[in-house]
Amino acid sequence: MLLQAEYVSRLFVYSGGEPVLCPGAALIVDSSISISGIAHPDGFNMLVKQYFSNINKAYDFPDHFEYNSSQCKKIKHYMHLNNINSLVTTQKDFVKLQKYFSNFNIYVIEVRHHLDS
Image 1 (cartoon, rainbow, N blue to C red):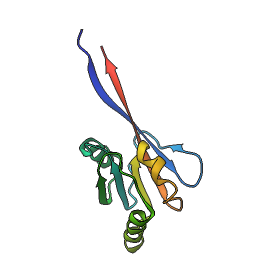
Image 2 (image 1 turned 30 degrees about the horizontal axis):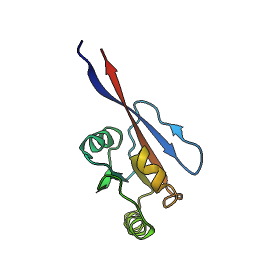
Image 3 (image 1 turned 120 degrees about the vertical axis):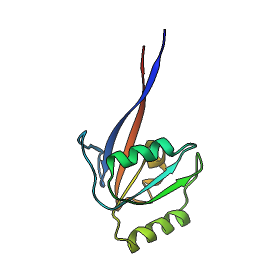
Image 4 (image 1 turned 30 degrees about the vertical axis):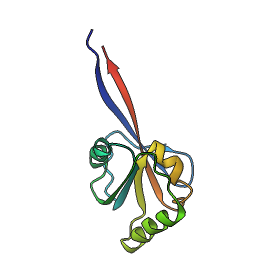
């Protein structure tokens, strides 16, 4: 038996409330940044490019990165200087980042592994 794995992704937006699923073919054109703290961010960064046409800057941190207010303040300063109101991140990082970026649109890419036999 041969198993094949593929990534299945969905995009959600948090804008001060409950998450809203974005339409499947949505392409976000707002100037945004991406933030990830995962071991191999290349796959995530490819997905970001599928959903976003205008990523101003990508912040790739080490796996299990512990974000702090000082680091997030620097990122928010960059966002302010460049008139950016949105960021995209992973589900795992959203949990850590939401308290620092509550006044921004936060897009979350949910990735699931799908196995076919």
